[in-house]
Structure formats: C-alpha cells, structure tokens
Length: 115
Length: 112
Image 1 (cartoon, rainbow over the protein chains, first blue to last red):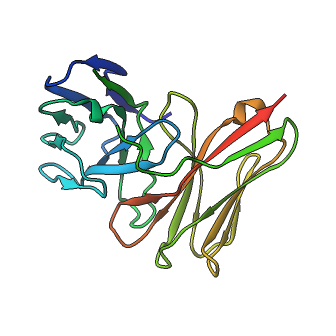
Image 2 (image 1 turned 180 degrees about the horizontal axis):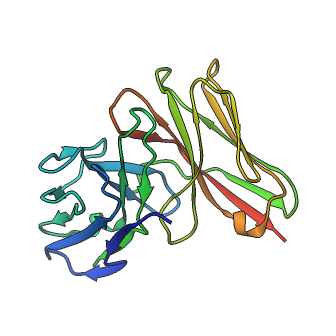
C-alpha cells in the first residue's frame, strides 16, 4: 500500500465555488503529480512538481493551479468551479533514486461533481 | 468534464483462463515500462515493471513481455480470477524526467 492520501474522496459543489483538493504523501517522494480522469477513460497529466517550490503544467490544459510549499503536500485549487470540471482527480508521487525507473504511486482519487 | 479521449477497449474472460492485455507505445526512447491495475473507485495500483534491457519479467501470476522492435508491451495474467476485474493501464517513461505516458487502458472483466 502506498502512503499517499487524498481528501475529500467525494465533493459536490455549486458553480463558481473555490475548491482545494488535498494530496499528501508520507514517503518523502520529491516528485508529485495530478491527473484528471473521466470515467472509463485515460489518465491525463495536468500538473507536476519536481520538488518544493517547483510546479509545472502537464500535457492537458487545466484551469486549476497547484502549489508545493512542503515536500509532502501538493494541493490543487480551482478558483471558480464549473460543470466542465466534473471529473476524477488523481494524485501520485514518485522518488528519483534511480533515474528512469520512477514508479508512480497513486492516491485513491477525488471524485468532483460541479452542479 | 468533457470526454476528449477514447473509450477503453474491453476483454472478457472466464475464471481460470489466462488473459493477455496488449499495449502499444510510441516513444522509441522509452526505457522503463509499468503496468497498473485500477479498480472501480480507486487509484491505479502498481502491478509490475520492466526495463528496456529486458524482454520478459515475471511476477506472481503476471508476466510482462516487451517487444522494442514493434514498440509493444503485453501483460499476461495466469488463471484469471474475478478479483482481477479492473482497468489495466500501461505506462512508459520516456525522455521527460520523471514523467510517465499512460496508454489507453483495457477493461478486463472476469466471469465466474
């Protein structure tokens, strides 16, 4: 079992609300990632971080933002949620002790529904 | 959100049969490959990995085969059980440091 946690697991909110999805890991991994996944579909990388104070946009354009102030914490924020943001958001982390063999470990995901 | 990707292919097998799930990758520079299993309502879970200097690796009831010539990866599950029902994703590590590229995924359904 990977020690990576996401809260909340499920969230139903109204349009225009600001939300923050939490992700934390206790493995001391330097790299962390956010993916977006619609039901029965592929994973799309939306943000990643190489370490503290490092954030990068992923392959899929997203209106969300992330921060990495502490190694173990990588929250994702939506300033104004819209129904198009309805999806599952998966957080992952990896360590780089062996370059090129970085297994990513995933959290359980947050299912977001914007009404 | 809007579904911009493809719907996943499916594989149905009987309990006890062997399953083979295939994956194609595009980056010839990829040097590390991982298979993940994702059960309904959960995040992807690591199953097995393989480096590009190998063409076969075995785990418990699972075997991964890598054919770099045609950029193809397969996951074989022996004596498939109902608990193996899930979506299976392959992922490869290319030139982007630390980033994985995920394949399309396959829905495996095991019938008792």
